[in-house]
Length: 232
Image (cartoon, rainbow, N blue to C red; front, side, top):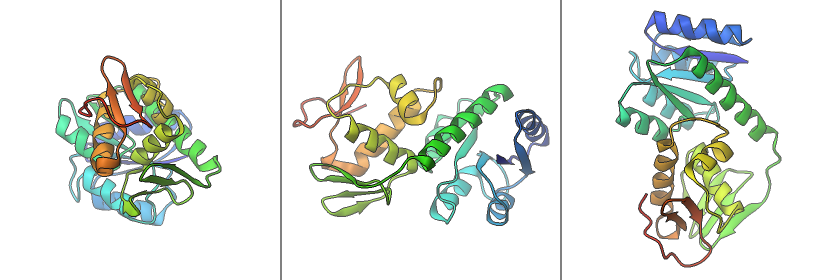
């Protein structure tokens, strides 16, 4: 697998490179956002690790550019400063598949890389056809598109995966850690990742959203009229 590491801190980049190479990855290191986009355009990249704060376009802007382009399905892991919740939320909203807060364990990052790659490979191999429908919400599996009342709704890759999971498992309550494992494919991670995606998906679906909060237990997609407070 070919991994792109974009970080302007040479010490961090070198540590990450050595750990990933030890796990059999091919690693290219660049020091700016613009260099990261250039590398993605000219080389095969299977996953990108982007630092939020770097010159030539920060990681969030780079991720948004990736999602808008021909490499829109490229898995992305964001590196954020410890405690910068806003950066983590923006990273997820920009379409990042995961984030790791600095300072971090290089081994943990390596495990996250492997997890995201497994999930991405499995999704690519899974046959996708047909649609899932509930009320005014339609998810086109082949096109990976969502429509609400016949109008297209833009979703990130993970938001789409979350919606599809709910539509396939209606009226079933899932705790955040269950969703993290079954949608993200992670056995560990920050549960706020799930909360952010739930809120974003509700906002995009509007009145058609049937994601209910079951207090003390988790979330469910209800095929019945909403009765619970939808706030996360």
